[in-house]
Length: 290
Ligand SMILES: Nc1ncnc2c1ncn2[C@@H]1O[C@H](COP(=O)(O)OP(=O)(O)OP(=O)(O)O)[C@@H](O)[C@H]1O
Ligand SMILES: O=P(O)(O)O[C@H]1[C@H](O)[C@@H](O)[C@H](OP(=O)(O)O)[C@@H](OP(=O)(O)O)[C@H]1O
Ligand SMILES: [Mg+2]
Image (cartoon, rainbow, N blue to C red):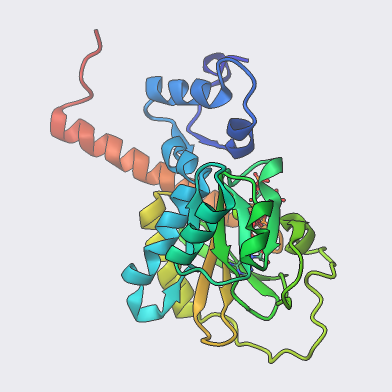
């Protein structure tokens, strides 16, 4: 349905990531929405499409992650080293690129496309010979041993919430493991890939000040306020390690989600109203249309 007759809208909250990735309608829904917002500048789109679209590409989001250790130096926050593999090429060149980048095995291979049903198929690669198992375009990211605990940080406006989830355990070297990430890190996930068989030392959760700093930095870097960050703690160094960023995630396990979303929408609309009224005072009103 065309949007204009359904309006006017003060704000539109969307989860268009899957629709964009799997778009088959013409014109794409994202185009229809962007056109509506361009012709109705007082409507706020949460989150803005260009910022959100950037995160559909792991090449782009992992570049942002890799700069965090610089901007957040005081907090000892980092992300694992990784390699972008743009296209299929012969095994020796991929092996050489892995070595040149200083990556250590095991490596997690993730699709370049970060969202949508096909983006969660991953593999854990244990040796240079097994690099033949990858399907570019993809990223190869060093596996960090973290005691099989994932900390999902869910951001809603100026609030954020941390939820613990199961996560991949450490494996001795073996043949490539192919898995779907939703098998391992959903609240209900129960998998051999996450069940710890030896007694692991219990790691402290990430420091709340470090997580505050991380979220503050990412809000600015991403230009978004509805996103998730997946964090693990390196069992050897205790470094807070960012492994993934997600667009408008499920917020499962965050009971305050809807009230926080409402507060965020209200605060965005209040800002919008005060910007419009200060524009009217300084310019004597909006410019006349043709
Ligand atoms: N570098 C890493 N080191 C150790 N474990 C990792 C690493 N990267 C990913 N994992 C494990 O693999 C799982 C899936 O990774 P990732 O979050 O990138 O996938 P995803 O498909 O984007 O999942 P989601 O939709 O929940 O974000 C993580 O929850 C974690 O258990
Ligand atoms: O299916 P895609 O478009 O890739 O998006 C997923 C995100 O990547 C995940 O982060 C969400 O899971 P979490 O809410 O567990 O982070 C996941 O949440 P959901 O399973 O609750 O919908 C999705 O939002
Ligand atoms: Mg993700």
